[in-house]
Amino acid sequence: MKENFKQKSLLQAKDTMAGLGLERYRGEQVFKWIWQKNARDFSGMTDLSKELRLSLDCRFLIAGLEIANVRQEAGGVKKYLLRLQDGQCVESVFIREGQRRTICVSCQVGCPFGCKFCATALLGFKRNLLAYEIADQVRLIQEDIGEKCTNVVFMGMGEPLANLQEVIDALGTMSSPLGLSVSWRHTTVSTVGLLEGMGMLLRSALRVKLAISLNFADEDMRREFMPIASSNPLAEVLRIARIYSMDKEMVTFEYVMIKNINDRIKDAKNLVRLLKGIPSKINLIPYNEHPRLPYQRAADKNIESFYEFLLDSHHTVVIRKSRGQKILAGCGQLSGAV
Ligand code: SF4
Image (cartoon, rainbow, N blue to C red):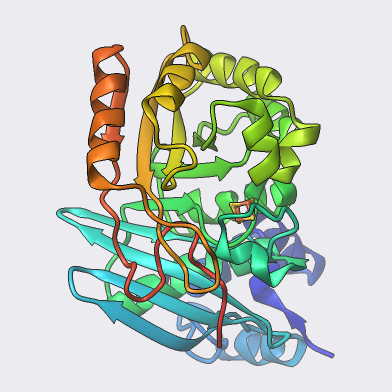
């Protein structure tokens, strides 16, 4: 059976060529064709000799994700259903906003963590994505829109820190000048607060932005709605967040606002108390409703009052504009429906 060359990192591509008795830079050439020029076979790689192309074609194939469906919402949001080689599907979202072109990628098929308000949780957990399957979401969407993205966010299906090694390898392909050349500084990894992964990210050389899906300032409520919080205490999550903000990049706390659940002023007061002294930004995200979940978006007046309270308490806070709700492409709405 032929090996899929697309699964190789840049280093592996060079090692493979060396293993075949060829110059290592041949690996760089093929890597570039795959990730920058969207090559799907070796035949068009014109800077390789015809003999080499034929020889590579006998050993390898180049296979990646395919677009199974696209839904578009007026205003620059596109939701992609992407089919993996084994037939499973993930969703990715493209969002255009002014000069900014953001691609939101998935890192797992489904998710094991069962947050009550999240549509992805309804799928259960199927499997982790491989590094090339994560990076290929960006490549494929860029090819489809005919433009380079400016930002990548790991906020699609799954928890990036539960698949950290593949996420790190995908970041290697994404950030490489021979790959997708997306700047790390324009890359955000979002987590529900997995301590082990946060610690690893902190100690690594990566300088990606870190977003923590906080959502509840009260530990008991957090555990009720986000079961994984039971084994990842908030105090420790915040301790690592503080160090990350001071040593690396300023952390963003995401707070999804759900009607009558976490949208009261007393919740805002708890939040202020909790985040005291942590250099950070807060994103308030009006909850994106989903037909299969019972929760509702907080009322505008509650969101405004919450926002004002945080602002008056000297926090940097933004209300994140909800986009893509009509096509279920909003935060927490991805469920991979074919
Ligand atoms: S919010 Fe994130 S961690 Fe929780 S179920 Fe959804 S995808 Fe998984």
